[in-house]
Length: 522
Ligand code: NDP
Image: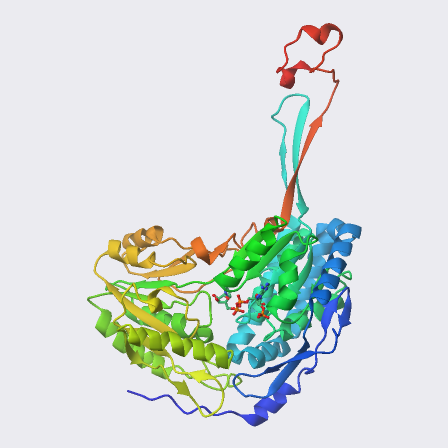
């Protein structure tokens, strides 16, 4: 058994990274940088402990100014009426600038969130790709037409932008998650107010600067920073907001949805998950072990898609857990700026304490630790990759989202049992099934109530494929070919062509015609 290598922080690398971007940031409201009332929120790197960024602590008044700017930009144009060609051009230019600033954006996300730099670079590349995909959908957006309603009737269904969209994002994938929403809303012709997590606002603010650079008209994309109850809440209640696109915890999502209900806002909710990885004895064990480790410890497990529940066939459970423990020890936990690190720091002390509380509660309920559970390093918020075994489906650790580098293991004997276990939480975001018997794998996949099912792979994604949850994992889908349509309203045009006569209170020869023959009487 290998022990975790000590955590070594490279201070020279840290100082070089800190030089790449300014520490003090401003909000973006109505095409200009806005300082707020001077109160700032300091963000310290959870790995290094040093101040990385300071963002304004926005107030409700800032949120209202941003909403008013978005409303004006929507009602007065020109963005909602811009041609698809021009909207796509702006999105494509933005993608190019995201690529240009890849290193800077990745460094901001790494320092603010604690995620490994290699991973952050990949997220920036994925974000740019999503902006390009949204540009392609902007050109594809169309409605329907009906020429089969009779010789004198024509039905046309237009797709119009829904209006002002509030985009509220969490801290775990700062640039990637805003990129799963904003470019599609812009492609539809909407105007937006974005509120990132106060801990990871840097890359979203930089993105707003890039959008100004590519010529997005003022007021179309506004970014307000600060705490959820102060600056986020008005984005869910203001009557001038037409839609809420929220990613975050199920609890806050539920509250945002309830707040928006008073003015009947459309909502799109991407929420939590407790995602099962179902492993059958005939699986490719090497690949399944790699995916199990990746699923549990990628982004330090702070991932809605984390494969945080291992459902192992009882025949292989012991062998699998012992091999997984070995791999978990090999995963380098360390300085997020080190390109070899696989697991970075936990987002905050408060969150690390919460993760430890979940592990402690599991032990008190009768579960056992196979490995991990402890903090690593003298400084920084690092936690050892953890496996909790002897878990019963009724335990909280098997049902609640831990959002840390903690995987729990349960066993099954039949496919039916695996499906029942997989569906035994209130979530339904994703699942994976590992078996060389493709009939068995697809059978289980079809029985699982989740928005995404991976078969013999894990956490693959593409902008072409819709993403979202069943049950309390969310409402609606992001990405996929309908991603721009989600930000539109349908307007039905009913057109009468050719000669017309009155039919309800008929005049002249038409008087004898029966009411109800509307489709043919004219
Ligand atoms: P939270 O739900 O705590 O916060 C999400 C966002 O909502 C933050 O910007 C937060 O602001 C804001 N917010 C908080 N209170 C309010 C309010 N009253 N009104 C409006 N906005 C508010 O989630 P976390 O940031 O802690 O992220 C972790 C959670 O997100 C996990 O549970 C995870 O499963 C989920 N998640 C889901 C994903 C998915 O696609 N399904 C993807 C990524 C994460 P502030 O931070 O300033 O308080």
